[in-house]
Picture 1 (tube, rainbow, N blue to C red):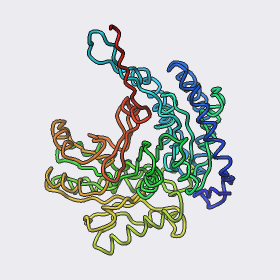
Picture 2: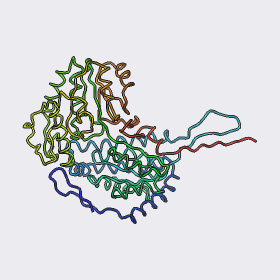
Picture 3: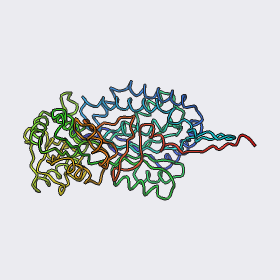
Picture 4: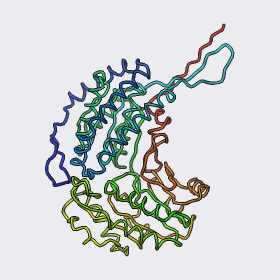
Length: 460
C-alpha cells in the first residue's frame, strides 16, 4: 500500500495498493498484444479515439481540478489551468499527427520508389511527476498513442488520481483494452519494467538522480529514453526592457505553483541601469501574494508539496543569508508560513552570488535571487554558469539582441518577454543535466517512432 498525504493539512487523501509483479507482467503482455491492432488503425481512426478522450477529460474538469488541489496543493483558482493546458497540448499533437507521421519522400530516381516510413516503437512507459501531473504526462501519452504505440503510465504516489482520470477518459472514449493502462509500482519494480523486453521506450520527467536511475535500468537494452530532469532557469532583464511587464511576468514565473516548476524562474540578472527599480517593483508585487489554504479562492500561493520540500527551501534561504545574502520580504507578512508545515513564504534575495546553493541548485520553491550585471556579456556568462539548461528568458525590446544573446545561451528554449510556458508547436527539450530527448511539436514524434526505409525497384 501507499498513501498520498495532502499538503493542505497533512491528512491521508488517497490510499492505494501497489501492483504485484504478476499484475505488472499481465499489463505488459496486454500492452504488447494490443499495440499490434492499435498500430494497424489509420491515423484518422486513432485521432478519433484520442479526441474523444480529450473531450471526456475536459468534461470532468471540475472534479479533476479539486482533486489536483488536494493532492499537491495548487490553489483552486489555478488548478483549472492544468486542464486547459492538457487540452491545448493534446489537441495540437493530434492536429499535427498526420503531417508528422507521413512518409518521408526523397528525390525521384528512375526505376525506383523510395521513402522512409515512421513506425511506432511499440510499448511506451510514461513515468510522470506530481508538480504538473497532467501537463507532463500528456506530452508523451497523446503523441505516443497517435503514433500507434500502446502506453503504460506510472504516476507519482503524490498524484495517483491523475492516472485514474486519464484512464476514465480513455474508457469513455472506447479505447481497446490494453492500449492505455496505468500502474502503481515501486522504484524497484519500475526498474524491472524498464529492463523488460516488452517495453520499447521510456518517457521520464523528474530529478537528475531519477534520470540516472532510468538510464541505468535501460543500460543493457537498446531502447530510447526521453528525460526531462528540471532546471535552474535564468532570466535577464536588459536596460531597454519594459520594466512593468518584466516585473509582473518574472514574479509570476518565480511564484506560480509555489515555484514548483521545472521551467520556473529561479535566478534573475538585471542590468545595473534599472536594477534598483526592478527590485523595488518585484518586492512590492511579491508582498501582494496571499499565502493560505489552496481551497480558498482568494489564495494565490499554496503550500509546497511536502514538509520535506518546504524545509529544503528554508535551508537554502537560511544558508544564503548566512553567506551574506539579504532577504527583502518580511516573513511577518505571511504568518501562515509556519516552520514544520508545508507553507513557505515567498522571498526575494539580493547580494547573492554563485557560491550559494540558492543560485546554483534547483530550489523548487517561491524564492528567487536577483543579481546586478553590467551588460550582456556578464549576463550570458552567469546564465550559462549552471549544470542545467532547460529554458532561459530575456526581457528586451530589441529582438535582434535577444536572438544574438540566445544563440550564446546553453538552453533548450529561449524566451523573449515571457517565461514558464510550453508552446506545443515548439520542441520541448533541455541540455546538460536538464536531460535529453524531445517532446511536443512535430519533432516530438521522432522519438516515439523508428524509421523504416522502403527501397523498391520498379523496373528490371
